[in-house]
Length: 407
Image 1 (cartoon, rainbow, N blue to C red):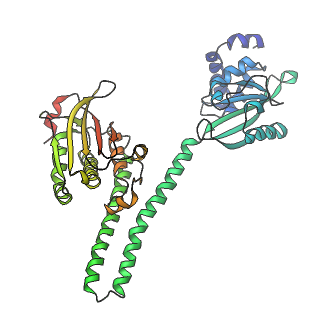
Image 2: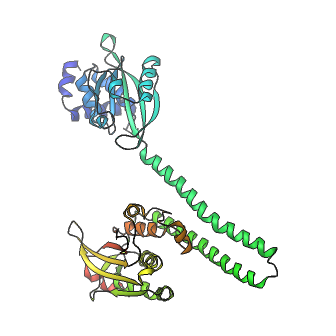
């Protein structure tokens, strides 16, 4: 087909995409996921003449950022996603003006000089911390002879999510190892003491055994919390579908923690509506989440001598009905700078106090993951000196016929 006919047929992005798909299937079989460089080579065979407008239409269909340069490093075309990486890009201008990363400029120069693909990673701090990788691929564009030009195709991948996952994994391993190492070291030390100097000291033996029991309990709880988090994350994509009534869960949790409340000298006041509040959920997970909130209130808010638990019906911002379980303590409260990080794994406002209370630093993280799996959320409100309120928000089941499903 003549070049002029191609221009008419490829006058829109959709027409170009259709021709490319057809060419790819004719040349290489059924279409699969292909690289940007492969698409550019296919475009060369289909279009047959280097036209900036056609190049623009071609890279506009790419999911990621893409920039096309000539052999001298001047910008020929770029898609909208590329402006997020290099806002200063301008057609006809040297690429080094818009690409302010030395690593990128060096990769462009190497690709132009060697005519070989280049890959480079770089890090940006403005406007946000972001890790990126770029591929600079030399391509020949045109029908051959004098109409063929040498171009450079740059494509980008955002590595930030992968890097953040790697950092989270490293932090998690470091924190988990540290949390386990401390009680293990204490146990080993006391065992050596009991085998040596305190071997025949009944008073010291009783004291050390009590401490060893506390450390072993702490390790067991840490491992239990880690396993619970792992299990919840494994099923995070599967939202529970069993009807569960919230008020009986609250009563069961309160009854189970009355002994702890008496030991701490804290009075628990519960306000529950007469009507049931049905949610689709996992009963055991909801009990575990609420237990963590109430235990925290009893341990860290004990100075207030009172904990209020309120179950109510409300609405989300979108107007959907939700059930709310608020746990309010009257302790010292939490400083504002700590609130955004409370649900991070192993994050503690006061490490010494948390360990003294037997905390693992995973309780609120577990609560957050349970609520996320149930399509809910956790809100935290606190004022220094006036206590804190932790509220579980769970979407209500609109079909009230679920009442028969809960024993």
